[in-house]
Amino acid sequence: MTPTITLQQQVIEGTQKGPNLLILGGVHGDEFESMAAIRRLLDHLDSADLRGRLTAIPVVNEAAYWRGQRTAEDELDLARTCPGRPDGSITERTAHAVSQEIRRADYLIDLHSGGIVMEFYPTVGYTLHPDKSVLDVQRRMARALNMPIIWGTSARLDGRTLSVARDANVPAIYAEWMGGGTCDPEGADAYFEGCLNVLAELNMIDRTLPPLHTEYTIEDDREDSGHIQVNYPAPFAGYFEPQVKLKAPVQPGDVIGTVVDHLGQQREEVVSTQEGLILCLRVFNRVHQGDSLAAVLELDPSQ
Image (cartoon, rainbow, N blue to C red; front, side, top):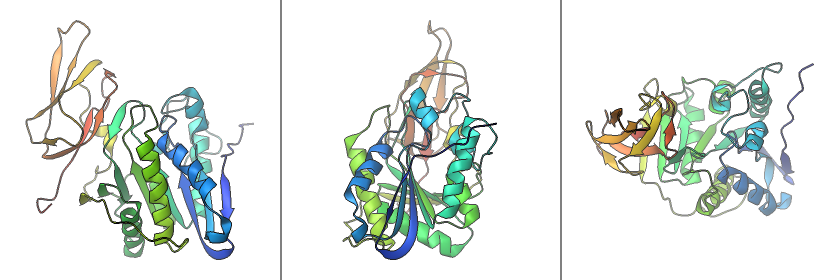
């Protein structure tokens, strides 16, 4: 019989009635800011101050965490495997378990980072949900989380926690913060404060919202918007030499970086096809063919 996945979670039940907010961390095993922020949030919140219920899962993907990698041993991306299967592989069973939690929630926050291989300019995102009432709540939650970039993207991408939330009409946001394989204390602080802000925005706690730090708000409903993994793939296996910095402006024709072989005899430039800012950039130099090297955030000309 296939073992059932039990997600380690803590529930804080408020003394007053209210909604159930689910906060997820560690959907990928190498994304540490979320884990630290959620533990701090659990230590900080008092049930006497809470209206409703907070359900927190600091490390969703324990198999990947103990492996020290983004994915578990089946090498499936949990963020592309939802809603999963109860009798499947380790990642499929984890996806099934977390999808059940999402369907029980009234709101969802899913916290990420660039992990070991990428750095991601701090961003909060949501799907452009077809239900305007859900979309409006997601926009409010995203503003409250208070990241430099707010990014609404296609609701048509399946396999994610956000697609499970989409199908259940659960307002949901996700966030990204830097990466590089360590826990950035600034990122953990930003996530902690941001989650408190969202709790306040949803009227689950009393808190004065701070000034907004948002630099750009972009909504892009194109088919693959939000699908970072398909952007700027490595043309062959080798060593990636980035030639831009995170958040750098780029135009079509600008060189993002170069992939070379061990002896430097094979060399190919990876060239931007877009105008915008470098939203995320690979920082782990070894690449396999097809690995994503960067993503460009296209800006509204008015911004």
